[in-house]
Image 1 (tube, rainbow, N blue to C red):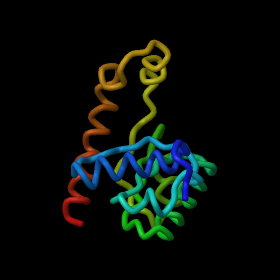
Image 2 (image 1 turned 90 degrees about the vertical axis):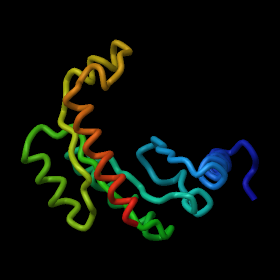
Image 3 (image 1 turned 135 degrees about the horizontal axis):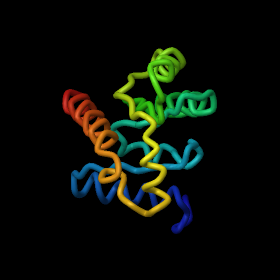
Image 4 (image 1 turned 120 degrees about the vertical axis):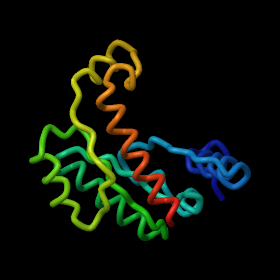
Length: 147
């Protein structure tokens, strides 16, 4: 039995409260690893969204998350390509993860790095990035509504 105050217990309790009792949507930005996930947390999860940058480490993490999702019985393990700088980066992600569904891509936007340094909001700093995120959100909603 987990000790109250441990991270997995907190996440599991939060998800149980929000999803089971309130039927709300929760998007959690988790660390770029898989060790904090487990069956108690995953029972409330409809999909894993894996943000993948065009590089081998990021692709490796996506594969590890996909394997974990499969082991936990999570039906959807989806990719969002991030910080892409052109068609070559998109193609790299597609070819590296051929068995994963890609919801869309977010281009590299230098104004986002500047906004983060200055403590400004991302949506206000880069309307183009905000529009890309909205499109990905729409694809995700459509996918999960059909499931």
